[in-house]
Length: 331
Image (tube, rainbow, N blue to C red; front, side, top):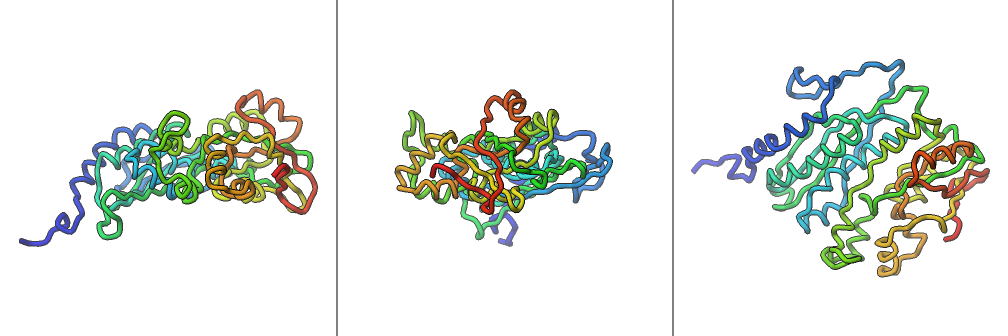
């Protein structure tokens, strides 16, 4: 009997089945800028309608949140997470997501599982008015165990050069608004899994994994609404490292973001994690988003208008003069 690729553990037919399951849905994310008729080795996206365009890119994965999904065989939200972790970063600079590429690696490809993951990406792309224009599915027996998957993505957005948001216009007196997170998002899960090893235990009347797998919130529509109505000084995506590490990335030298932690609406699952794991509050704020998925910095005169546009947002602090780029009051 001669050796074949299938005998080595790679089933090309399963890959073809995956493509068949997703191609119709993926095509729904395309627009007139996606040039499908040009070649087959690369994806083409045409730029038009911009005076001085700047491309903004971001790449990320889902981290060990994947372990929760794999152990519970719940794959529908992971694709959303992957897209959100990339797109939310570029939205921070005022960029509109243009297109997204995904990478899916596994030990043995299951077309149904792969399609479910990609369908989450499709859903997220539609929300962000973004095209899913390409991807790679790699079946690697010997590198991954059967049932294991890894997911990563790459997003490209665009912004006019004179409209880039980078924090350089932040000044003393500006206010900080919190846009709520939907939970842990896709960060800190190595610690989450250590404290919550049983994903199927009941939490607030339902299996814990349902709470843990709530997908990362997408912020494009909220930020778009604000940008259409006003000029924003800075935006920070609160990912790994929490407020402590991410807010200072946009604060200019000589200024300090003073945040009142007592007004932050911390999700109950994070409070339970803190209690059960005997985790110090400062460690929590340096690891998790603590209920704040994104921070928007804007002029004090714009706060009332912003809160009217985004009722879920709320004020958490002010920019002052100071040497420490972030001060968390109330810890």
